[in-house]
Length: 86
Image (cartoon, rainbow, N blue to C red; front, side):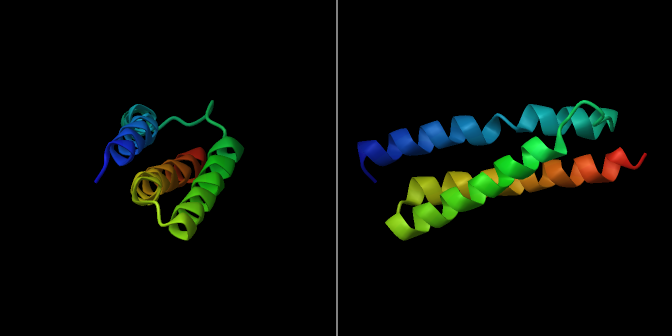
């Protein structure tokens, strides 16, 4: 792994883990009234496209960080749909 890959992983990690505080807040409060499903839906789709791009370029930092991001954002989308009913 070279220096450029390390920078890519660090940048990707910052963006990936930025979703965690929101997920924890929703999990604890079970309130999603002010969170946009449309925004998280578009973001999740964009992340999926980034993964495809990373695979096509054979770029491990893009693939790894966006795969984790996809899981976290799918969890958030699930929470929004699930808790919106309550």
